Length: 429
Ligand code: GLU
Image 1 (cartoon, rainbow, N blue to C red):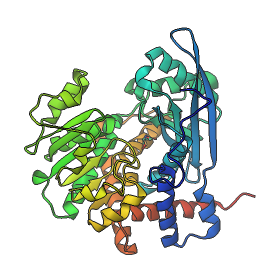
Image 2: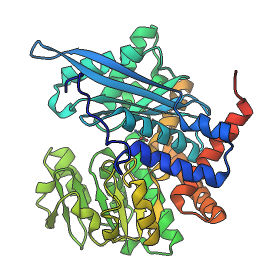
Image 3: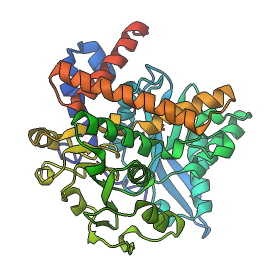
């Protein structure tokens, strides 16, 4: 990817511009909340946006320059928090939207963080391990003064993992000349990571589905589930839902997926992909082959889009055939599709609630690192359940009180919390 021509985000006014999708929901919620002008303006814009050009020596001896971003949307309720995404189509607009979503997400689950996000335009599948290491270290070094346990705390996202976080931590520690495990979360267990962090987003989704099923008086055993995306989020959501008695009937990754109304053997599928390194679409487990897009429209009770943004749009939302839509990805539904989903009376668990299990256990990891005292997995999972259940109940209650859907209710709850904190702090002139 040449730095002279960074890929542009979907143009302004396009349904697929995620920043505009995020803004549209913010506007509706702010209006409903009667947010005063000054606070509205303050929360609408990020605190800072950094673009860096990252020179990396490639294995073949050439030097490449990659473009990277880190956006801090808000530090009103605490240090910035949010993942680093490595993907070919990263754009500043996307990172800006994802950073704002982190602010709202942390506020929905009431953990003491602001919101941030980072990204590098690259294709991690085409980079060697050593190239990825050099890219990660240089990205971290260029942003070192902005990172810190009380400043801005990165985590994994699409295209990054525990190893990436270990490199971020080590690079930061070399710069500040002291071990600083709490500068980043999602680390390996051996380096101050937390039990249960890897599965946390999937577990949070599973807990939200349990709550939604109970709310709609449905039965878990008869609930058919489809999961789009089989990365860290989708695979663990599918696995945990299978283990807790849901019937997972469809799973897909970018290359395609399988569907079987009688249910899929998810542990075998997980082993096929992660144990044997094979492609999900080629799983010989008896099922119909379906594309990653088509799987969204197969009949089911719960649909979990856990792949990436903009999967459900105004053009295709009418084809949804589910009762509950529980969002694992950030922004899988465009704002223009929201009215269609509402009209179809689909019960929505919005991304800023549904996938908040990840950042919640990131918070637990940060707490444990700072205390130097680590919790058992059962303690982590119990505390996560507590946070998710309470947040789910609050969102649903806000929806009832404000006569709105769960998505706008989650935004109202979040904006209200951040606005109150902001007013207490006051504006420093
Ligand atoms: N990347 C994850 C998210 O979008 C986790 C962020 C974190 O743990 O800081 O929520």
